Amino acid sequence: MKFFPLNNSIVQKLRHNHPALIGRRLHGSGKFSGIFEGSTENSVLKLSIDKASYIFNTNNHYKNKHFIKLVKDYGQVGIYSLHHNMKQPKSTHTNLIQVPIYLYEVEKLNKITSNTKNHELARYLVKNWQKYNALSCSDDLKNSVNNFVSHLRSQSIATKNFQSIIDALDQLKTFMNHCNNESAFFDLHSTNMMQREDGTLVFSDPIADFQIYSYYYRTYKTQ
Image 1: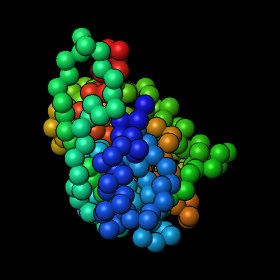
Image 2: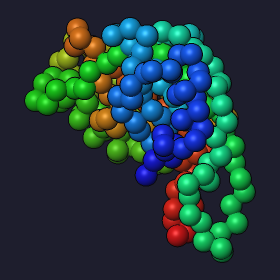
Image 3: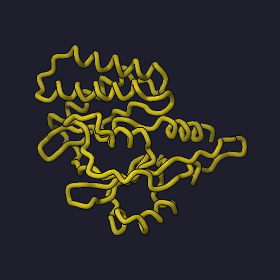
């Protein structure tokens, strides 16, 4: 399910009027965002309603080689109504929720190639996270992230970048611990891990907006 469909009028208006987006080709899209070609061949533009991910990816406080590199932050560029394009039954009384649309430019990354060390490492991380995962933004989730990182620290993995990956996850844990309740969740899965040309594994969108996810999940479940 796409939480932010790119064929809506707000996105079309931004693509035709925002200086950074005019003429930029769409590369792809996820639940929360659209990815457009950037100002250089080595960058992409992210148009997103994912506030949690935006805050993390544009926050210079969290620095690690496994985090995506910010090129330019354009900030908030619009407002999106979450129930746009959603067919809700008469019995559902969901209040209208409006969220900011953010635009920022980041480095261009590559997909992780199958049957490589990064592919095996990504699968290992996802498999271990699933043991602790509880999709909630309560203290249970924070404890799950803490336990996950502690578990990884106890493992002896013969991988050059494993320690730096644990350090990156430890920073993500710190970010989560500072989040307000019902604002973010830890979104670790294989499609949110990519790599640079030099082979460095990168967590592209490890944090996601819980308010938006829970809104659509609840609305979808009632239909």
